[in-house]
Length: 427
Image (cartoon, rainbow, N blue to C red; front, top):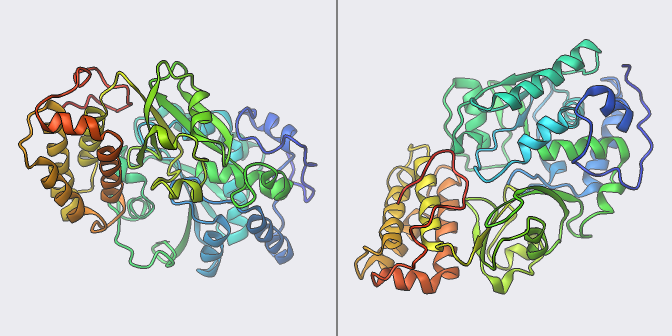
C-alpha cells in the first residue's frame, strides 16, 4: 500500500470515530492512504498545523488543552522526539480507548503518524496497561499489518505500563518510560515540554489522535460541522450506572447531559449524574439539561474530563457510592505527597463512616476541613479530582448526607454498587 500526497475526498459523514474497519485494507479503502509528505516539505507541515488550529480540536483525555497549542509546544522543543499514545484508560468507568483500539486501531496510529511527521519525531509508543492483553494484541496486530505493507514512516511499538489509575497521568507515563517508576512529576510550568532524556515528547490520548487522523485527511470542515461554534466536533462518552444499555456513544459537543444519558436507557428515574469520571463532579437534576461542553459545564462546577457519565438511579445511595469512589481514588494515589498518602485515605474513612451511619456529630465539619487541606496541594491533579467528587456529593446528596450524619442511613446504603471497579470496594 503506497502513500499518496492526495487525501481521500471528504464526505458529509466522514467525521465519525466509531464503525470504521479494524483491518488496514478496509481503513485505507474508507479514508485513503496515509498522506504524509516528505520530511523536507515544510509547506505540508504548516498546512497541517493550520488545519489543526482551524478545527478547534481540544484534547479528549481530560485536560481539554487545544491540540494545536500542544503540537506547537512540541515542535518548539526540537526534532527527533517521541509521540506517546496514552491508551492507559485508568478510569474504571471508561471504555473508549478499548473500543477505538479494537475497532479502529489504524485511525489512532495514523493520527500519531501525522503528528510525528509534523513534529519530526521518529518514534511512536503506544502505552497499553498490563492485564489488557486483548487491546495490546489488537494494536500489535495492526502494527504488524502496517510493517508488512511499508505503510508507516515513524517506528511504532506497544509497551505495557502498570495498570494503575495514576499511571496514565502524562508526567507519570513519561517517567515510567524513562525510569520504570510510574509516578507523577511536579511541573510548576505546564508550558514546559515533556522529555524522554533529551528528546522531546508529544503525548495525546487515543480519541484525540483519531480526530487528528480525520482532520489531517479531510480538513477542519467536517469536524467543525459538528458540535458548537465555540466548541466544535464530536466526542466519545462512556455511559454506565443504572442503565439498561451501558456503553460508548459518539455525540456532538453541546448535547444536553440528559440526552446523552438517555442513549443508555436508564432503568429508573435518575437522581444524579457523575460527569467527567471518578475524579469528576456529581450533577443534580436541576442541571441535567446543561450542554456537554466545557464552558457550559464550568458554570455548574463540572468538566467533561475523560468522557464519562454515570447515571445514579433513585434506589441507589449517593453517599455509599461516593464513599466507594473516594476509597478507590485513595487506594490509587501515588503516595509520594501528603494529600495522597494521608489526606485521601482520611477523606475516604470519613465518607465510609457516613455511609454506614456511624459518624459523630462533627463529621461534616471534619470532612470539610480535610477537603480544604487537600485541594490544590498535590504533586498532580489526582487529589483535586477526589476533592471535586466529594464536594459535589455533599451538595447533590445533601438530604441523604444529613440523614446519614444523624445515624439514619437510607434503606439503599447496603445495595450492591452500580459503579464499575477493577476489584470490590467495601465500606
